[in-house]
Image 1 (spheres, rainbow, N blue to C red):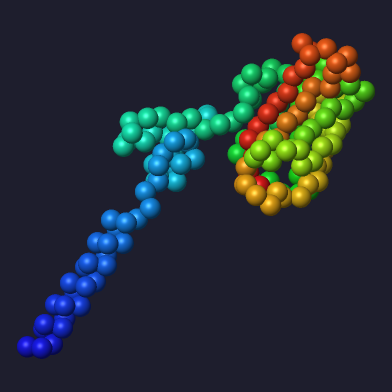
Image 2: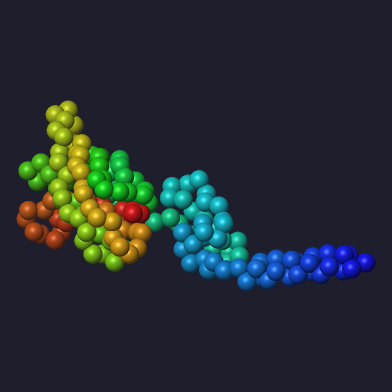
Length: 175
């Protein structure tokens, strides 16, 4: 009889701890696309991806930068938005001839707070058959001590310094 009482008591204690740990589990507050995924919600197969939070009945769209705004002028093949990157980072893509000045244009890598952590130039790989010119370059950097997110900025080279001629492709990345 004592064995049954001990078994029931152990079962009650285990059930209590299971209930307590489940009820006190950290609740994820969904405020953006990333937290929507972290809460266990699926991402739709669209571009950009979308996540629906059924609890808040909201849809969150993945941040892919301004790709669609400059897609007729510049295209970055690698890395893609929200890719995890490391140093040295190889960048490849193509841009219209007016994006370059004397065969190159600047690339900047910033941390989560907008602090510049690396700068360099991407160089044209001339193709005489096209107005769209391939580019390639390598960017070396040190991973920031804080924050996992940053921004890769490919700037149109503007030697005139006229602000109305400025343009850039900005994509979010993960360190």
